[in-house]
Amino acid sequence: MDSLHSTDVIVIGSGISGLMTAICLHPRKVTLISKKKLGEASSSAWAQGGIAAAIGKDDNATIHFEDTIRASAGLSDEKIVKIITEEAAKIIKFLEEKGVNFDKDYTNNFLASQEAAHTRRRVLKVNGDSSGREIIKSLIENISKLENVTVLENITVDEIITEDNKVLGVIGRHLGQNVADNVTFFKAPNIVIATGGLGSMYEHTTNPRDIYGEGIAMAARAGAILCDMEFVQFHPTGMDVGLDPTPLLTEALRGDGAKLVDENDFEFMKKVHPNGDLAPRDIVSRELQRLKDLGHSTFLDCRYFTNEQMMNSFPSAYSFLKKANIDFTKEKIPVTPAAHYHMGGILVDSEGKTSIEGLWACGEVSSTGAHGANRLASNSLLEAFVFGKIIAKSINSKIIKVKDLPWINVQKYLPKEKTASRVRAKKYIWQLRSVMNDLVGVYRNEQKLKKAFVEIDRIEREAKHLSAKLKDMILVARFVTYAALLRKESRGAHFRSDYPNSNNNYLNRRKTTLKELNDFLSSKEYLEKVA
Ligand code: SIN
Image (cartoon, rainbow, N blue to C red):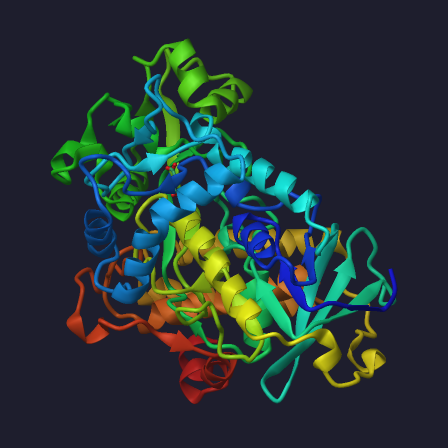
């Protein structure tokens, strides 16, 4: 590939947000950059839950709105929640027109599942718990027919290039080789970041290992404002059988009667919350973690499911269980909380715009305010579809073409140095993941968070020439730890054992920047008390 590639819009990421934005940008000239083969490197391809949409006879967008607000623990943006819940039915129609076959009963009504904190059965699925994979397949089929979209695979984006707070393009590195001349400057007046969340920063995650927050890191380095960085949602039922990443056992299993139990078959959630096993996800995860810390074992009991039922309704769970050699009709399945979704990210407005002109963010990498401190299950694919459509409409309403950008001395921006060997980086990446799990995980407190900073500093020092991936992970780890340290209360997915209650002084979404983080890291307070 040449050292310069020019286009009108660059979309980075090939999950649902990236694909949806690219489809809706038609007829604009788009380059879609994917780290792996299309469809292979996104969390949405692994989504089991589906899309929350109030289309049942007993449901409407207002009830969906109220459930979302309740789950978000006071921090969501009502305007955004209204937009996504009201758009849901239109998104389902759009997807059906694009060839997505939602699961329906014999009278052609949608088969909706029940997930935690929803007061109605409203999670629509495709082929049971294989929703993400099936939807991505249909979107890729659509993309392949679009002549305006160029797909480039096996390229990772390291930096966003800006001048005067406007984007000029990005630097992409061709994967597989680690040399300085193997990079391209992708020039474009509009960049859409759709790189997903940060699950892979943690030892236990339900996300693919390629999802480690690089979109957040590059946007922060370019000067973008971030928001809600402390809010990492842990899914309570990651399968704890030594597989990595941790396979997800969908909440819909509990919606269909699976039970959380301890080693004595005690249904522990019954005494913790009136909704028992279907209590909000943060509460379930905390109870599981608490029991584990006390030395108990935690399981999902699916023993009353038949093989046929599991295979037909939950084919992904069925294949994970087979892989782990677990006969769920006879044995309980060991489960653990695992990092699943990041509510924070790059701050965007109701059009998906970041604080940098020409830079947009869509899906989990963004912080729209739709999820507040705790995302309602299956609202994330909905948000990705709604914002993909909104961002494409905004970009298309103001035509700026690549030829309108100034001439650029490409060589000035291309990196000169080699990065560290990936093998050497791997050791430090795993050290960082265990720091995040143990010290910035389900239970946090000041002592743990300060220790996390010390450990992150040590890893950075010892790793010396950082690989691009480790550099991004260290930056994002610091952002999450810093935000968690500042929020001296417990709210939604953020729990501080030293401040176990919520506090109305913190009833705001917290914005931050790289400058603020760097000021903190070089402050007297940090150097004396933390480092
Ligand atoms: C699940 O199926 O339990 C996950 C759904 C989600 O996280 O939205």
